[in-house]
Image (cartoon, rainbow, N blue to C red; front, top):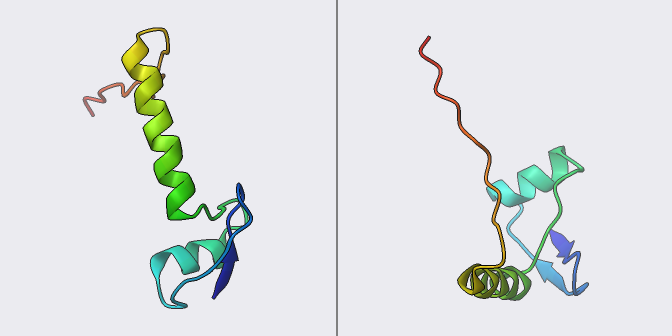
Length: 66
């Protein structure tokens, strides 16, 4: 399956039977990002977190005592 990165528009080929390919086929909201862009964003986020001026909001998980 041919896929295009949403950031750099690089065209890659992934296995048709992979989980990522299935997600891209069945759910149009999912987009593909190449490994280089993913690593670059992760590195930049870690640098911003290290400055102390960047807040990384994560979802609050409320415990359900069902």
